[in-house]
Image (cartoon, rainbow, N blue to C red; front, side):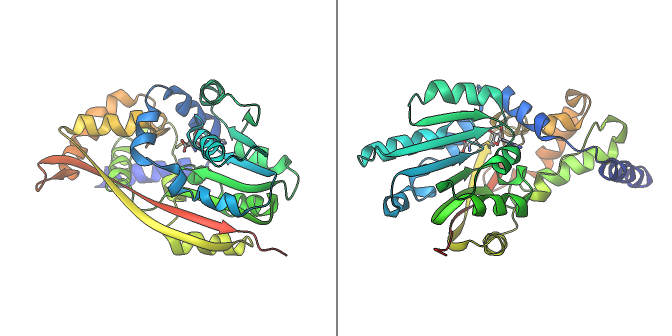
Length: 299
Ligand SMILES: C[S@@+](CC[C@H](N)C(=O)[O-])C[C@H]1O[C@@H](n2cnc3c(N)ncnc32)[C@H](O)[C@@H]1O
């Protein structure tokens, strides 16, 4: 118990000294997932057109100027291009930005269109340089916790045209049940092994109500905010941990430790105990998320 408390003290010191994973370290980890990320993305969002309410674009005046913020490998960008084409809309331009160089390289070759620009840049730095009222619509898929909440909403609101739309899909608190506490436990038991701490789990929206409140205080009107949950199950705890690490669900987490492999058996053992479902006879993990749509008022 004393050892664990001292471990927590060590973690607190890292927090106070701001030894927290940087956005370069997180996007660097995403770049490493170039071969496995798509698996997670396809499992989680089979139909971006519905999750992100693409049909609302049809109500907006043209020419459409769209931002895909933290676009990753361009899954949403590609779905937008296909959607607009299927509705014979040609008068549009999409700017897609992400901090992971490998993802942007992949996106550029996957979506070749002269109506799309892919930009490799840190997200907040990109937003701050943009002129106000530039975009008819902004999309952000699965990236909200990587950005400071109030500033990013203020920037999005600033950059939208009056009546412009902001469509989000984001993990929410309660997702990946047990995983944060397992990692905290392993960190507090092995304080000397801890390189840096990660604060993205802390930065997840609590629920639809809290997300709508943030949007309102940035000057946006909530049109929709719904909660969803998906569950994935595995034959072994090792498979579950691999899914978390290789799919991007826990991107960056390996960097918490100087040598992640040293702690892998301890983490796996805890997953085996806490994520086992007796009913299913399998190891289960939940992904809880929110789909939301906001609009900038006309004046
Ligand atoms: C879970 S992926 C989502 C990608 C894409 N939106 C999708 O739906 O497939 C999160 C993305 O956020 C990007 N990201 C994280 N922090 C960032 C930052 N500070 N600036 C720019 N991109 C960032 C990562 O590089 C990664 O591509």
